[in-house]
Length: 106
Image (tube, rainbow, N blue to C red):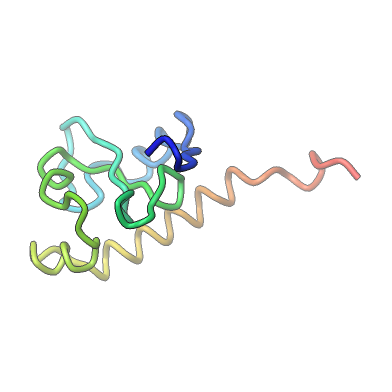
């Protein structure tokens, strides 16, 4: 794990938690959330804005290092809804975190 670049900031994590409003997989609220790699580290994933989803302990432990879509199907969770929301949240948060063109020097 030390050989893998991880660049998720605390601010990005807070933004992800706020955007999802609970567990990205089951929707649980009012429980502690953990950083879950959508593509597990064992399969080449990293702790980055594009690859992290907030997960309750139960979902994170159950998913383990499984591929997310296969796991969602096995758990009978809405795979399409997760993927569409994941892409939308990533798009929105990436746009927010990009520097403004006026802030970038010549």
